[in-house]
Image: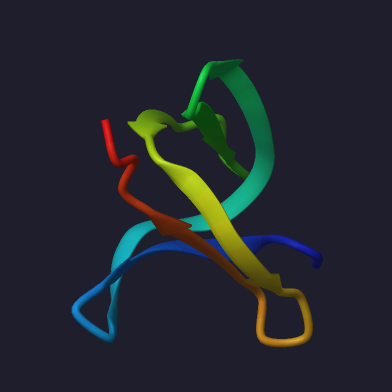
Length: 65
């Protein structure tokens, strides 16, 4: 399986947003819809900081607005 977990980067640490993310779709400026492998969904506001695909991680940071 190729899904990854999504995390917030905060104060040098990682806080889990959602497990088993299959799809990330933009919903607007700095807004994203995360869809899990079982169809669960979550919308978040932030920027993609990086992706570590070997570690199955998608890293987000809060928007500065």
